[in-house]
Image (cartoon, rainbow, N blue to C red; front, side):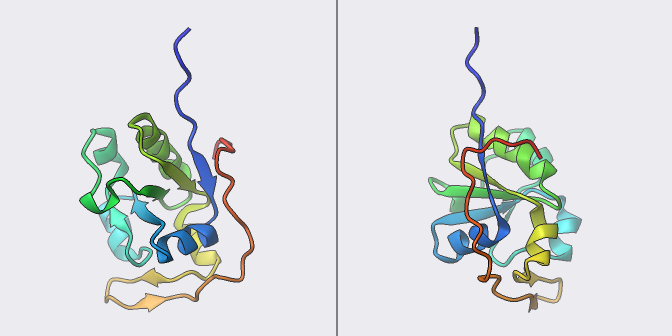
Amino acid sequence: MPPLPPNPGQTTPAQAHRLVRTGAAVLLDVRERGEFTAGHAPGALHLPLIALAAREPLPPEAGGRLVLAICHSGNRSARAAQLLAERGVEVLNVVGGMSAWERAGLPVTTPGGGTSGGTGDSSSAGSSRGAGDAI
């Protein structure tokens, strides 16, 4: 029987924001270019899921670091997290994606370079690393 594929864990937008802010992780936005440029988390790296599926390498800034995959709703990033885990990358999926990120009041960089949103630090939700729930 072949081994089971890695099952990446999950994290909340608030926890992801804290991990990125402290430098413990990098946020990898796997949406398409137009979605990313319309608004993304400050400092997020960009690599569309289609490029990731084509085995394009991660941006150099992600090398050897915990990667937090995010998309619009959490579906594409769940697939991206699975692909990255299969490559041996330590990765978590941000549950709810940018929709949940924005609902939590976390900052979003917009096309003009401005940032909207608050700090989002009021949430006490933590990582559910290893939970493996499907999105």
